[in-house]
Image (tube, rainbow, N blue to C red; front, side, top):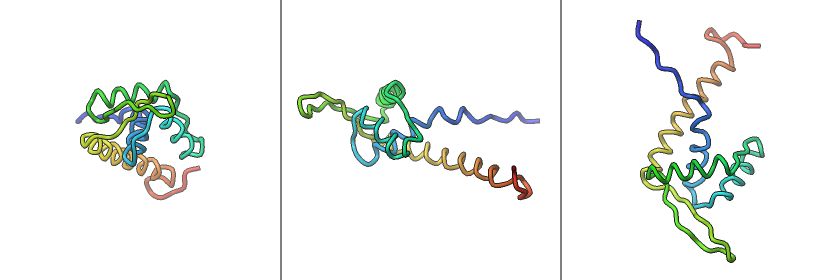
Length: 118
């Protein structure tokens, strides 16, 4: 019998996917990303700076994001944007997440034979 690979921890890639989706539209700085996730999820998702900044730094190190420093109203901020590699990575993560959520929804809607699950 062939061994099956298990799914990785589902939530591991969620902050990464959220950040890449936000940055595909426009460049943003760290706290702006934290706030956008909270606002756009109606405060269901609250990802703190302690999660966002390490993800941003890792994505930049991997060539998925690029950054530049900008002064706005006397404050220096680092703005992040998605690279071409990042756009491909986002598409892959998005497809993986869509497949995973579709499978979960299928189970929540009913069992293998269509019976309701209490």
